[in-house]
Structure formats: structure tokens, C-alpha cells
Length: 77
Image 1: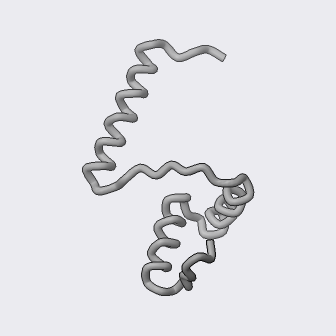
Image 2 (image 1 turned 90 degrees about the vertical axis):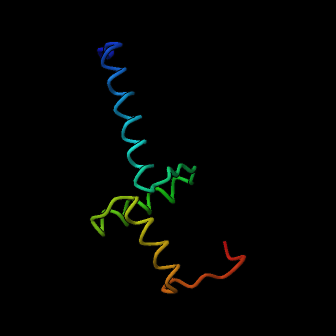
């Protein structure tokens, strides 16, 4: 596989920096966590069922927990 040129690599890096800057300016924060493979499989299935992105599913989960539609039991996780 052909490696991208240094110029193209720089363009991609600059675009990524611009995207992250834009998202931060819109009030978003980056989230990166390690989860077990089984969790990722389930998350992918949920996303496919709902026709939603991982971000949308996470936002919905947090919103529903905040609004009391999901029971939160301290110490259950």
C-alpha cells in the first residue's frame, strides 16, 4: 500500500486539529475509553438497531439516566 506524501499527511493532521478545535468551541469534550470487546459488540448492535452513532447512543443513555428513565443503583457497577 502506498504511503501518503508528507504534504498529504500534514493536510490530514491540520484538518484533524481544526475539527477538534471546532468541536471544543461548540462545547464538546473528547472521550476515549477502553472497554471489553463484548461491550463494543453490544454497542455496535444497539447502534445498528437504532440507526444511531456511538455518540448518539451515549448521549441518549446519559440523558435517560439523568431524567430517571434508567434506574441508577449506587455500587451496582
